[in-house]
Structures are given as structure tokens and as C-alpha cells.
Amino acid sequence: MKNLLKTELYKAFHNLSFFVTFSTALVIVLWSAMECIHEYYRMESFFKDLQYTKNLGYPTYTLYCNWIGGEFITAASTLFYFLLPLMAAFPYGWSLVQEQRNAYIQNVVSRAGAKRYYGAKYLANFIVAGVTIGLPLLLNFIVVACFIPARLPDSIYQVYYAVFGQDMWALLFYTNPLLYDLLYFLLAILFAGLWAQLSFVLAAHFKRQAAVLLLPYLFLLIFHYVWYSQITYWFKAEGSPICFLRGVEIGQPTVWWVVLIEMGILFFVTGGVLLKRSLRDDIF
Image (cartoon, rainbow, N blue to C red; front, side, top):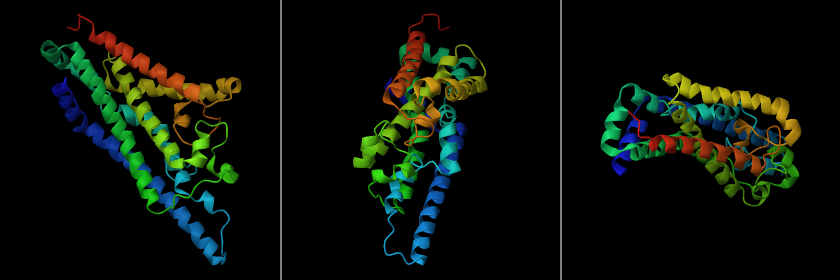
């Protein structure tokens, strides 16, 4: 299993798809950071020109609402989370389809067994998806932190933060914002790792790499539209991962039970299907 995982990780991190996706994610997060930093210094200069001795709005200019997971103003932030599921699957989600087509899977399974093969495949895909999303998010946070102070948010300015009392972990945002951002950082990585496995699930039914990458994303876009046009009137909660992965309220409050249900479905569907495939005897 250990050697198989090393091999899978090497293939996952040494291919053009990973390089293109990771580079795209880096460009987007740096774009967001540059816009937020520029706006911060523009406002600083504005108040200095007015010769204000104190800007009462200082708490609104804080690291915690200017990193890409906490800001909702720039187009870069919206674009990153809109593309997040696709960027999670693109680096390595296509590999199982390719290895079925070129008979690589039969060679490996005959020597190492199906359980070890699928286990290594699952872990490698999860790790590369997490890295593709997690490292750019971390870089954005560090870059913004180098220029914008980490002032403690003030609940008086909650309309500027878009974090309200009914939102998940909202109390943490106003008492321990670093932990709040860390939780959303981990949530994005966990979602990316689980979402990337959907391409493996579809590999048994589709033989085209584009199909296993795009069909789950297309389903998500349809789900996003249906939730906002129909379901949101019933639940009054955020149900689209495109929105609830962000540490701000976009349309409806983010509530823990919706997030838990959707993440649980992803985990049991992807893990269950791949476990079932690993136990099959008719892999050839």
C-alpha cells in the first residue's frame, strides 16, 4: 500500500493537469489579495488626506474579512469558489478512466490487489485535490496578512463582514477569528478531497475523461440553481457548496446540519462505491 501510494502521489503531482490547475488557482488568489490590499491602502490614504485622527471604521479593515475566504467584494473570490469543485477534480480525477482504457489497472491489481490499488488511488486523489485548493488559500491568507492588520472584528460592523448570528461558527468569528478561518480552510480542503472522488465513481460508467470531470460539476451547477430558485424558500439556509464553503453569508445563512448532510453524502457515496469496486472479483 505504501509503495502504491508513493507511485500514485508521484503521478498525481507530476502531470500537466495538476500544473495548469494549481497555477490557475494561484493566479486567482493573488488577484484577490492584490485587490483587497490595494483597497485597504486606498482607504488609508483617503482618511489621512482628510486629516482624521481616528477612523472609527478601522475594525472593518481587518485580515479576517479581506482574505479570499472572508471577502465577498472581488470577482476573484467569487470565481475561485465557483471553480473550486472543478479545480479539485481536474488534477487527477481523470486518472482512473485512463488507467482502465490502457489496461494499467489490470497489471497493478494482479500484483497488489484491488483493495490496495483503490485505497492508494483514493488517498492520492484526496491529497492532490486538497493541496490544489489548500495551498493557494493559505498563500492568499499569508500575503494579505503581510499588509492588512489582523484586527479583531467588531459585531457592530457585522453588515460589512457578512457574518451574522445565525451563521455557522459565527460566535468564533467575533471571539477567535483565526480559528474561524482555519475551520473554513479545513472545510474547503475536505470538500475538495471528497468531491474529487466523484470522478472515480463515474469511471465505471463513462470512458471519457471529460465526462467524469464535467458531469459532477454540471450537476452541482443545476443543484445550485434549483436550491436558490426553489429549496431556499423552504429551508432558509445555504445549501450550495459554491456558497457555504466561504466564510461569509452570500444568500442565506450557513447552518451546520446542511453542511454535515451534504459532506456525509459525498463521503458515503464515494467511499462506498470505491469500496464496493475494490471487493469485486471481476475486475478483469
